[in-house]
Length: 339
Length: 280
Image (cartoon, rainbow over all chains, first blue to last red; front, side, top):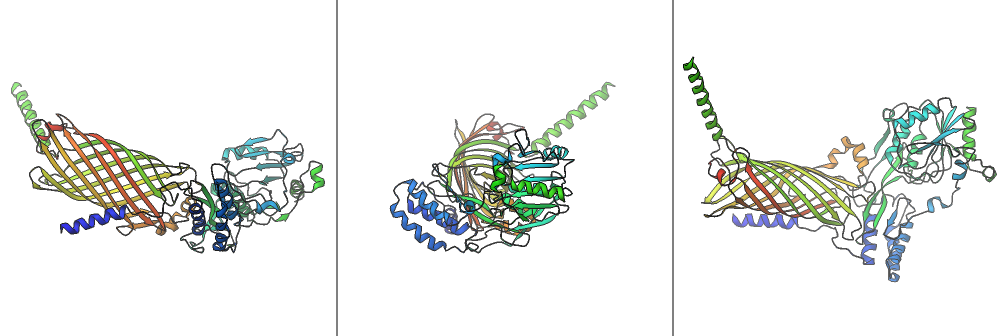
């Protein structure tokens, strides 16, 4: 009996002290870190199948380059090159001396935005007002309300919207400009989008990895917008939303939602995508890796990782830009005034 | 009138004496406060594959007594523990702050195989919660431990009594038997958990037992019985691992503790020891 108790206690102590796959020591070995990076993504990145990537083949190509690695900078560059094959703005490697980033998703698209023009005398000017993360003012002789939302990391409150609504009460319509907005918090996207709906609506779906396989995903869960949570009710207002290729992540999600809103028209260019909610992990040398882990879809279960198209395509022209005009804002003004 | 006053005073005195006598029959409740500090290692593969380590601080409050009419053979204990730890990854480029709280209740049966040496065996049921914050992470910056666990527990106590020193040497051992625990799915974002909590409950709440949770917690203490209070010094160790949804969790702690123990009504130490209802 005593022996059995001893064996049981020993087994418990042994199990409790079992090591899992975690690492306890700092390790700067290039191969260890490269393999840890590759494996983390292999197990957790969500778009291998969607992008038809041969991740094993990519490993072979880039692991061979480690023979030339002599410094941390060299290792960082090899890892960054491997990550660039994912063509994903949500994939970054963070070290103490650099942050890797992928720019291919917007490099070959029209810019369709100019800060100097938007904040020039034809539109917001220098006397615009700021409410939370929203820059706003009256444009086109006070007939149109214009909101510039630069970053979904900056929030807003019902009070912010109440004052904006008061200023815009006699306007023929509202322009919401989210061009070059690289994203931020999904909650702000959801709350802002809720302003334009009359009832609780499924605007998309999301699912997550449940295992290490490239196709191990949960069931799709619906994502809702709920007017009851909206900071203001603008569902009856005529609204035009401006987007471009640099609308990414939470902004992409915002556009996906507003494409379904009854009185909203989206104009500009194709958004940048970034449909995968990113999570983080780290390497034995302390570098952090961010990667897409939770894919999101639109209301038809279609992929939004590569961006979504607006209701109306409009590009900025050089002629307009030369006279301080923004072709996309001008188009929005004309739509709001004629409808 | 005078006789009436004497009668009332007599009745009052008798009833007061009876009340006091009854109160003495009530088992005494022993209160222990202790603080500790030491090292913690934690692994939470939802937050990071790295093992984080650093300093921790713990604060414990415990109350214990015998059950009424148990002939001093069955006792109970209530326990509250708070813990804070500041831990770092091996490269010291990121940190996890740990905030933990647990509350539990135990019952013990007392044996005395030889004079001065007693063994207490029983079960300890507790509810544990902890928040782990890795501020460098994106969308998986927080991880929560939430579980209720039934532990098997044993306490070994030796009473050392000399002319100058009254001391108890005690070692307490606990191991988790069964319970339930919250574990997110591998790629679950907390945004998603929050949005879809009712639908995800079957994936994130797990029955726990030896197959997915193993551990051992120990506490070695030396209690020095002074005149009106008992001073405590010792160490605790805690090693636990649990797994689920392809995620691994591990927590190891070693703390040096100091504390004091006394009875709120009768104080503690040697004065209390002389009363038969005190449990130490």
